[in-house]
Image 1: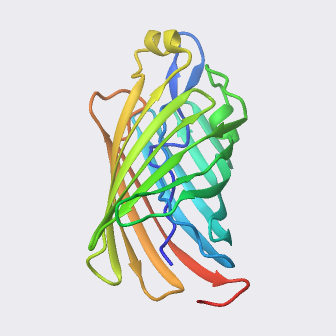
Image 2: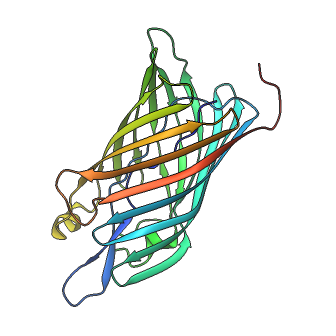
Length: 267
């Protein structure tokens, strides 16, 4: 079974600290953010658990997320469920907070199976719950509970595969990401992800503060499959293009995944 990847390809959970004017208190602004994943469905009865450390830095501050956890559980050959959460220490200008990070949960449904001349297509309607670090002093005042609707398209070849994700977050973000994975080696799987996202709300305030409406990131990673039960993984990346206080100077995460069979037998 393939390792499930961290589905977040952007720096900092949601926000960055900025001054609205010279004398006013520091505020936080929702930043463009992108998610990525593939169309593979976790086999029925299989549970994949991941624990990892993440560090993200932008010009206005940084996040340290530990412990971070995620899971994938196969329910049917076309359906699985997944989610993630973490504890995060956020340092932004004058704001310091330790709290539960942004969390998400979703259901992935395989719409089309992959065929020799057809890619796989899946959807993953999901709920997003913003943590306190994303809400304190936020000038855009996003709702705590939001939704995102990604579509995954995937095509496998002899020694590599590509998968594309596009979607919308109801707090006003459109995003897409393209990933390439090299499957040349049995136990080592390198991956590169390029993502882009764009704000669709409060554009006047965003422009007034001199922020980019969009941002692009590149992320490189490797998964080491020790055996069918254990996988190690690490990723690192940064933003590229026009820089602003929301762009990532760098981001890293590393962790371990454990695969467990809860019911049924291997075919």
